[in-house]
Image 1 (cartoon, rainbow, N blue to C red):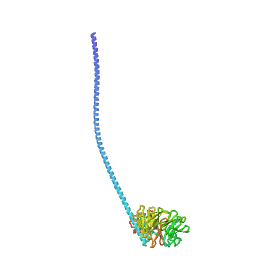
Image 2: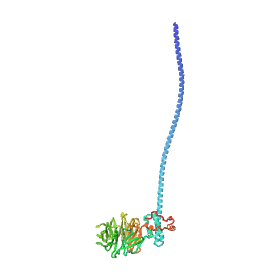
Image 3: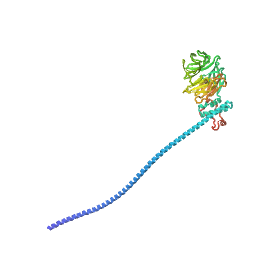
Image 4: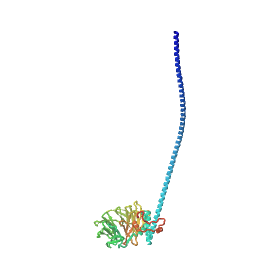
Amino acid sequence: MAAAAIGLLGWRAEHERAARLELQLTELSKKEKRAVIEQSINKQMEEIAYEQKRISDERSDEAKKQADIAELEKQNAMVAQQEAEEQRKKAEENAEIAKENANEAKKLKDSADVQRDIANVQRDLAQRLSYLALGRSLGAMAYNQHQSGGNKELAARLAYASYWFTDTYGNENDLYHVSVIQALMDTSEGQRKWSHLHKGGVTGIGLMPEDENKLVTVSSYGEIFLHEMQGDNLKTTKLFANSGFDFRSVFVDESGTIFAVSRTGQLVIVKSDGKTEQKTLADIAHPSALEKFGDEVLAIIGERSIAFFNMKSHQQQGTLQLGHRITASGRINKHLLLFDERGGMHELVSFDKLETKATPAAIKGIVTAFAHSDEKGTNTYGTSDGKIYVEENGGKTKELVGHRSRITRLRFKGNQLYSSSYDGKMNLWLYEGEKVEPILLFESDESDAWIRYFTFDSPKTHVWTGDNNGNLTRTLISVPMMVNRLKGHLLSEEEWHNYVGKSAPYQQFVSNTKGGGK
């Protein structure tokens, strides 16, 4: 029993040990299998790790390659950027050079344009001067043809051609060049003379206010005549005649009343109804001129005094005595201006006030005529020896020489100065140029027919002239009217080629570029 018990215990122990061993073996088998599995897994993991390493290496190599490529591209980009910067700088330099070249080209173009414009101006100027010279040459031919008594029709045609060239290529002053204006005046035949209308010399001319075709004249033989232009004819009516009177001046007021003063000391008044009134003037010797003074008063200028006469009441209002002999009168600043034989100049400010000063130092000789231009501010002085002095606004004085004897009258018409003289001539002066030459408007054909007086008609298209022999002359001074008289006188093509030449294309003067003259 003990042995059985011991054997049972031993068996049980062995059995338990075998069970343990079997359990251990089972565990070991499991562990072995697990180890195998783990080893397989590890191997797989190792293979995966190797594969991942390979892939990583490949990627690393690829990344390195990409990095190398990127670096290379970076280097290339930097090189390209540098090249681009260099190209930009070069482009900017080229652009600056191009700009400079463009500016230089523009300068050259502008210079070429200026040179072309200058050339055009010089060409046009040369052409203008050439045609102006041609106009003057044609005018001289027309004047000579007319003066010689030759073909007057041809003279008129040449004069019109002279006008056309001068008007087309010149200015207003060019039309008054001596050869042009004298050709127009002669060929237009715009002068009419009525011989010996008065028995004495014509000493005054006045325009009637109600009709531009009517005028009144007075003479040294005591005559007062009323004239009316009827077409080209002059109708004359005697208003007063007394050979004991020696009329020296006439004035017509706004109502048409005529005032004529005699050197013998009488004032004759012819009213608009034809009635005549005579007034003997007091305290005045040898009255010779009438000038309006104020609205209602006439200043009657004597040899050494001035009498004032009221044109409404027909009464003398006193006399102002002067110390020296008066040689000329005129108007300035709306005042009466008097000159004496000793070189004094007196401005009549009021009935009893004279402002006296010496004539300008440049004026040589005794002043016998004076005119003032309100438009230009110019004073002109005519002297006893035939000289004319033009004193401009700035004080500069110019001497005009063209008369041989005493200047009797000076008058302005715009920028034109008209003068008359005892030498029988009436001249026109364009006094604003450097070289001033007289343009002869009228010259008496009688040696002793001194021009005593002249005046313009109302529209200032004609000038009326009275001389020492009682002649009355009407002279056309309007260039447009002269041209209108000549418009039908056109050069034929053959005449054009003979007198103008073939350098200028033939013109029939159908129309004028400047509207018919200046």
